[in-house]
Image 1 (tube, rainbow, N blue to C red):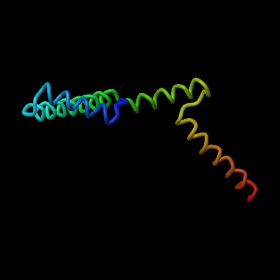
Image 2: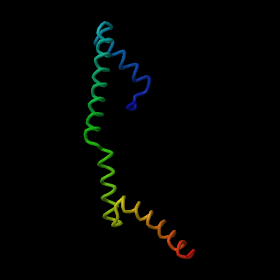
Image 3: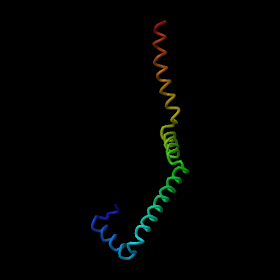
Length: 95
């Protein structure tokens, strides 16, 4: 946890207990926890609104089209064409 070991954490808690006091320390910890939860929720909302996964897929498709001259759908259809082509000669030989 941020490179803080158990002895350092105990020292921080003791100093916080001395400075803030035993009555207000639980309230401070509760408000700090709520603030962190709200921050996590806000960052998740931002990630969802940006559609990070969709953008990554589009970038990968663009990269493939630039490097290989094919799109993802074309490669799938090429695989089907190759399968169909192997079936056609077999049918011609049977006739």
